[in-house]
Image (cartoon, rainbow, N blue to C red; front, side, top):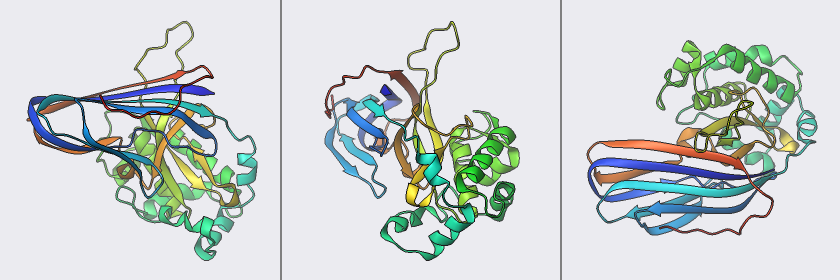
Length: 303
């Protein structure tokens, strides 16, 4: 399955910004099942010092500065992605029970498992707590296969929590999400990660997009999609398996991965520091569309 993704972020300021420095995590990474066929970051007004690097987790991070006065900043990421799901992944991931894997993570130190260690512990937005372990526990009976247990946890989050864009903010503590049983995809992904880590398993936060299809008889609305988030659990030799609690599904060919980290703070799409500007307004437009097979090669530019 091929997709073209356009993600635009516009900052409008009430007064001129004299200088800004920014960090973007908007260009999709490659995975075992996802190939980035092309990607470009367009920046207006023209940026200086544009450079791309890989962060600790292997994500593509772009740094840039704008040194001329401006009252608007527009950053647009255009990407073409090809996804080929692995039909054997879930079978391979179920070779371990969750409690076997917990012991392996705590005792074996081979190079592959060491890469999962950073995802076992507390992170800035996800503390391990007894309350999270208590919520997760009904899904994790002794000797239950890993994927079966995590799928059950995902289904319970989907049933027990209400999707409510007004119910939380980006800074709402996870304990409050657990108490009020409402939030958005970021909250539900954090919740899944927190539950798994509180049970001794390695889990990471995944940011990206999901293809949303229009209702029968309705036209697809260009730009009406949004960024999405889900979680992934370490499954031993099989690698990592994704789970989307917002939609109660295991991502296959309609989820596009941009980045992953310990939590949202590691993969914020766009952040920076601006001198001046007064009050500002942010608007975001995302479009995810199926694309033809033939796609152009990689390019990177600012305009």
